[in-house]
Image (cartoon, rainbow, N blue to C red; front, side):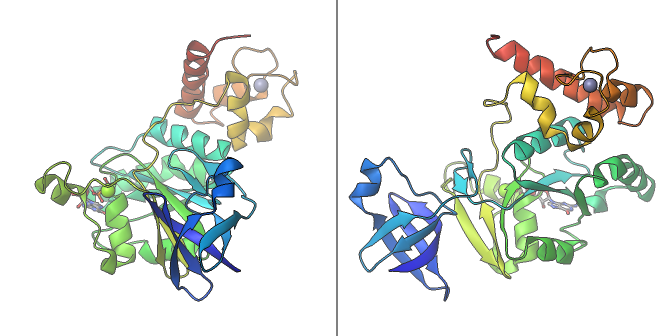
Length: 288
Ligand SMILES: Nc1nc2c(ncn2[C@@H]2O[C@H](COP(=O)(O)OP(=O)(O)O)[C@@H](O)[C@H]2O)c(=O)[nH]1
Ligand SMILES: [Mg+2]
Ligand SMILES: [Zn+2]
């Protein structure tokens, strides 16, 4: 029996990579189905000459995209075209934090900004740099690419970000051999032609990147309004100074987070987005 990592799943057939980078195609033993255990991409597994035998314990599991043992999420946001959105950034951060995955904020297309505009964006993101790693990139001019290679080493990384943010271009910049279609080209080829939307781990340098359609659904299905605040490292840091233990940081007296917002210690938009998300979750969830 051998140990390996699932990197691809198509039509029930799993591609497993062993320690010597050899690939093996296997189907799972029937017993796994009876035990209701479905191997997914990213799983470490045991396999033999015939079958995939068992799944080793997972550190985490994403549902959309379906992938296990993710170490890091690269949150791809373009500086321009489409415009940078702090609301979208906060949404992605919450979803990633909720899954106990380390987010890395990657700002692409910095070549499209004037120097002054870039300075302003960097200043606005300084607050985030206290809690997250932020990397500025131009896929076009190959700025920041080496830094991304370094942070992704020896890790399973997933890409997240809206269409057009530069995800495929980034993968191509890291490894030109991949030759992944970027948006303009895939549109030119027509819809439906290259739209196989399976999850696949792409090896590069000494890490893996999941080439997936990304987090297409940005709703908060498994979150309740009370646990939302636990996905804000900056709020957690302040909340020990809130008067009430159960403070939601929405309306309570003696709330340190609200105070920090009023004093400009938390960016206005970040706190306002929090209130919006809180209300959004409350509106879509039955209250008990
Ligand atoms: N100027 C500039 N354009 C970029 C950069 N990265 C991507 N693009 C362009 O942005 C468009 C969308 O890129 P793509 O990689 O397909 O985005 P995806 O939908 O996130 O995969 C394409 O026309 C790319 O050529 C960049 O760093 N600078
Ligand atoms: Mg793409
Ligand atoms: Zn509070």
